[in-house]
Length: 179
Image 1 (cartoon, helix red, strand yellow):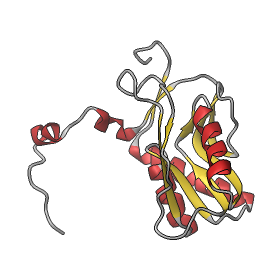
Image 2: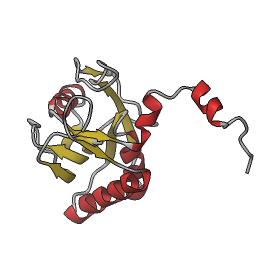
Image 3: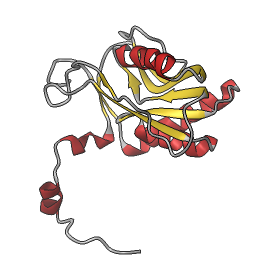
Image 4: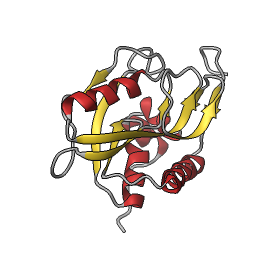
């Protein structure tokens, strides 16, 4: 159980990577062709990067943030960056919107509305996430796991929420070997 009294789903690095690959296969099996992947930073960065590489389509990044209260465990006001970051061109055509999870659904809903208003060249948006929680007001187009309850998902990279560089030094990581 997490501190808030809710259940907790712990995910290892190996499981996390398998989940991203399974999500990619699900999208592939759907037969839907898309022009861009737009990942929501920060949670969607890793899945978006992997899917972009597997599908060989450009990756765009949109920063959003809603978990800023109580050390990142309580959802606060949603902030959406004004611009999408991508290497060339503009976001257009069919877009696969990628995030790690849909919790309340507020982020997914507001980002889809934002894309419709800010990027008129986008013709279709579908969403892909690893985890889809029952309490969400939005249903993603692709998801790997439907979570009937609303567990806190303890992802493998969350240790970096509290670890700082001095913590790495204390671990004895003082020298990196060159390849």
